Amino acid sequence: GQNIDQPTEMTATEGAIVQINCTYQTSGFNGLFWYQQHAGEAPTFLSYNVLDGLEEKGRFSSFLSRSKGYSYLLLKELQMKDSASYLCAVRDNDQAGTALIFGKGTTLSVSS
Amino acid sequence: DAGVTQSPTHLIKTRGQQVTLRCSPKSGHDTVSWYQQALGQGPQFIFQYYEEEERQRGNFPDRFSGHQFPNYSSELNVNALLLGDSALYLCASSLWGDSRGYEQYFGPGTRLTVT
Image (tube, rainbow over all chains, first blue to last red; front, side):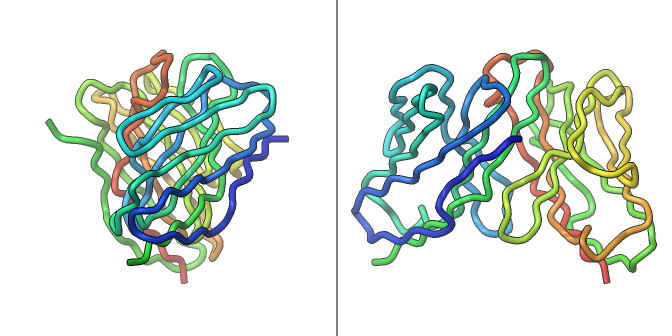
């Protein structure tokens, strides 16, 4: 079956660094995505990994190890506005179309 | 350039009723996917439409059906509503065959409450 696991909740303080882990077991693999979702709002795209390694984009970085079925999202210099749910999602095939399999999300609370 | 739009924003229905949700994709996109997001959960894929046909379907009963129009907009219909259908329904638009997939833009969602 398809399974994506990530911690339910995490807390951190302003200015700190936090790492949100995601493990996946899917029938196939064609890319891993991280989305940010503020309460009551639509998910917004943060990062995409399809090859092993680290992708850096400003304060956010994402890492992928396909052999381990593992990814993490690293957030640096945390700000209060980073308080949100972070969703890990996998696309499990290379056919046309972009349906994603999502994890349950990690709620991050940033305090001052 | 308008992003993905959905209507209505909120909806309250009674068990057994039927509901229709609407989505207009981002300009230039031709594919619409629908997701259901229960409170505290991640989005779950319902189905996807391209060229007015259902291309992929998730693990949802036949009570969930959809349609795509020639202008790429889409509707999600749910019949015989159950309390468990209460959720945020998200529409995501993309370009068919986009290999990177991250160009999937989500709309603000429709919050459906079934009483």
